Length: 494
Image (cartoon, rainbow, N blue to C red):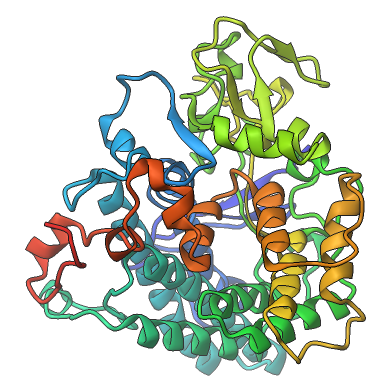
């Protein structure tokens, strides 16, 4: 079970109360007059606030599962037919610029950018005030974390909207309203530069007291994925090969255990959004409702139910059946009328026949006073299996770099398959890699943009009316167009 995490109550400027990481020592409150830059223990506080901005409803909960997964062929809206027409628009690819969930994503990720920018502005002040050289080095490492957070936010903004403004400092409302959009290529260059600078200063790992913090390999994995979206296969192969050659990561033996509370921040994890109730039933809201909004709707007792959104589609279930998938299917699908190995019942009375098993959280953890289902469940952003499959795809696409780890495309994909008791492949095609990504990462918010980037979306989403000239990006939210007249709408949206 998770140990307690602490809250750093920041009242300086626009910073808010935030969560740090698991298993770390309690920390005091920052005086309302501001940070004392001469105290090294305060260095991480602004970065902590940036981490906390990733743990919001707007960034990694309801709108997130809608745009990144429910839009795909992996998932249906779920819940009940009449519940949340806005999410239904995403499920049907029938949204426009007035969709509130899309607007929440825009606001949420730009909040992350703003908080990361603030953290970056604070690090030079710490470096000037601190006398110890190790403390000065630590400020640069913290700046590296903030750059990765900013790069990750911009990666999601770029995938979602294609063109957004680049903001690197605190701006007035008038200055923000005058910012125009950068091209997709410019955005990717900006993201890559942030990640490259971060890689040069970040440590390779942290002690267990700081489990979950962004390290050098986190930045490499995100950068590899950024290059993958641009078909820059030598860069993908080189970065993933370095991660594999480090021997710091590996697959857990049991696929289902990857998604357990006990195995959060495990050797398979390169990046997770941290969430916890601190082992309490009331108090500071240091949790994320990512798992809760996907929990079994209408289940009982109360701490074993959620909103029931993002249910596995028949298409996904048939895909697993056609592959004779058992290990991953058992972990991915949580059927009503069954009992989990931990002894929790998913009642026949539940609204939907099947739910996302990867966010299942045993009742022993769900102690929050008004429900608590999944509040202790971290969001897995990048796992080691994703790294292996990115490497395999790069090699199949013709990459000539990345030859130090000893892996080939076949051995990388077969390592993923071996874990779930599938027969090894004798050769590997691009479709083999894409299918393996679907099976391995199902319901983990990769599918929609995987379909778009690989050119499969028009076929896979034909029943939803997918049009690549339109749906490869989302509309710029109407509210943002009103606030900033320098923004222009994406093609084929009103």
